[in-house]
Image (cartoon, rainbow, N blue to C red; front, top):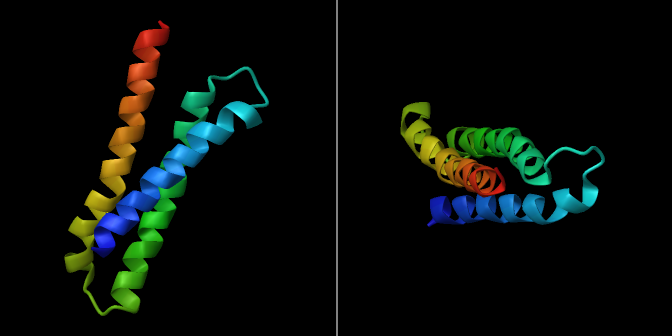
Length: 92
């Protein structure tokens, strides 16, 4: 259940960035691309923090946490890249 909640948090962060970046975009850059470029490293850091908490506080080993961490990072990250790809295809 925790994994689903964390993945949901990733989607929430992605949604927040996709809503905010067009309003905060300073340069003439594509705001969707900028949101994805901001999301990926932020989500990687959040995933690594979640992995660290699982190892240091919950008592899991790195070998137990790493595959879950990959899924937790990968699902929202792939969704972000798909959004970028779809928007890029429709814009060009």
